[in-house]
Image (cartoon, rainbow, N blue to C red):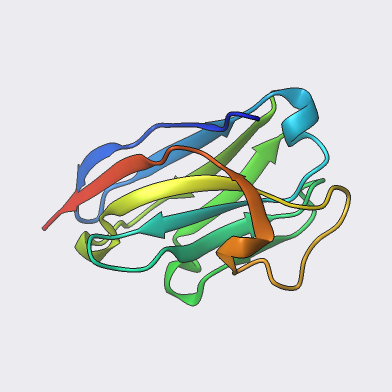
Amino acid sequence: QVQLVESGGGSVPAGGSLRLACAASAPVFRSYAMGWFRQAPGKEREFVAAITWGGARTYYTDSVKGRFTISRDNAKNTMYLQMNSLKAEETAVYFCARQRIPYTASARYTEPDEYDYWGQGIQVTVSS
């Protein structure tokens, strides 16, 4: 059993910014690709962004390209999601997650079942 811990959520007006963080132990975090998902009320869990285990490549859902930036600091065992120009419809619980297989990247990185460990989620509220 492992623990991923999200932080940095909160409430912002439309157009505002937040920076989420996801921390884990070194063995859990260091060698794995990671991702961010979100789930709005009444909606299915949605892929937001992913990053390879070394941070060399990043991936985003189309709706956040140009506004969100995923990054990681392996020395600190922490992944980040910088969210700019937030929209009201992006109000959701945001989850960080770890991919199942170390030292690789999955072609199915947008799919929740490709990830084995999940944080508890953190609320992001964007007011109109």
